[in-house]
Length: 144
Image (spheres, rainbow, N blue to C red):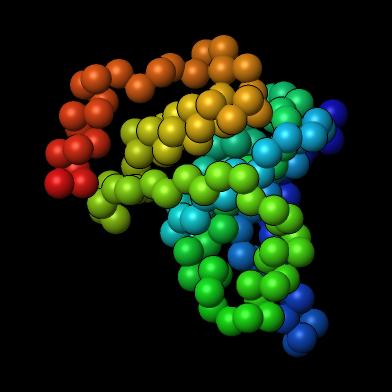
């Protein structure tokens, strides 16, 4: 099966392309989940998604866009809208910048994305752990 994950590359007029994030296209029609995140974290999460063997079997589309790519200029916003299409849900992830690159943070971010995808009916959710009360208290303590 062809991998569904691809970079969002915008031609920049100089013959090269600017990477604005990553997009995962499912093989079935469904909702679009937009996730703005820092550039380094988006790359790490994209690498983690590559490890999911049946990634393309989901319904809909997951779009991870670099935070700086949104609102940079009107032409870029229009280009993103044309590439992504209508957005059904936006997932804002909050964490300390220092905590975002470790293996636990990557696993936590993946879990949050997969939980939201389950809520939206994009995946069946088997193996996706629900958020436990102790997880909520840790998130509340970090976001303060």
